[in-house]
Image (cartoon, rainbow, N blue to C red; front, side, top):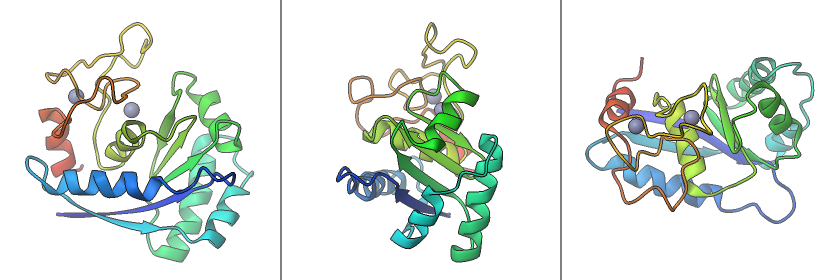
Length: 184
Ligand SMILES: [Zn+2]
Ligand SMILES: [Zn+2]
């Protein structure tokens, strides 16, 4: 089974560079048991990132996502993507307005937005959403009940995963392994 993913870092202050490495690490994990999914990574070109970063026509996160997906589909033939940006960026502000508890990132349709941090666990959590995984925490009150609510105490789909609460691979619970292997 193979899945395609586009990626791009919208930050322009020298903090670019680690997203590709982070995703390559996840790709090598996903290749292994118990998941065994092939992740094909493709970088969004600098010119396209420039265009995407300037999109301001969304009044809501779904509208923004649909503009981004349209552009990506036209250029790359598919729209599933992860975008890294600063918390001050328009995309992050729109995401935080729609989901104030989404401190580090949010997934909307085919696009995952990560902001405020670029650590591996935050990036991987959002990518796994794009591959079909669901949250393992109380989404109505994540600050009080951060999870994990599944059978794995270091599941990456808990709220705010960090190097402190996620150990070695496999850090995905059985339910989410099933969802990733057979995406709806
Ligand atoms: Zn999540
Ligand atoms: Zn879980």
